[in-house]
Image (cartoon, rainbow, N blue to C red; front, side):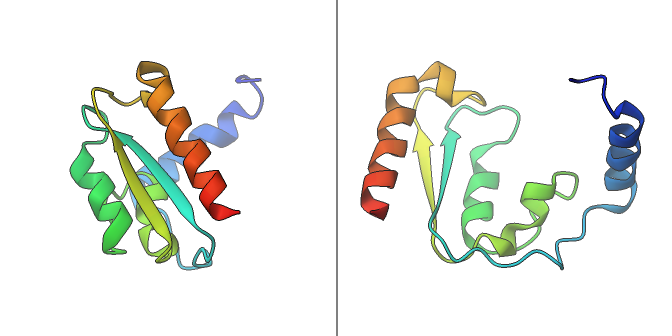
Length: 108
C-alpha cells in the first residue's frame, strides 16, 4: 500500500513544501466540524488548534489542513483533551470517544 505511487507522493510533498498549498478552490464547510486536540501535543501545539478553529488565517503553510483554515466554516468546534498528546485517541480513548459520541448525538 505504501509503495504504490511513491514517486507521485514525493513529488506532491516537494511541491507543497516549496510552494505551499492553494486552498482557493476549496469550498467553505457548512456542516458542523469537530476538532479534537491533545493539550500536550508536541507535534502541533494547542495554539495552532485555537487559530485553526477561529481566525480563518493560514496557520501552518506546510500542512494542507492548516492552510485551509478559512474553509472550516463557522460551525467548527474545538475540544481539547487533557493529558493527551498528538495521538489522543490512543492516549485518552475514553475522552475522545465521549467527545465524538456527544458531537454525533448533538448533530442529530
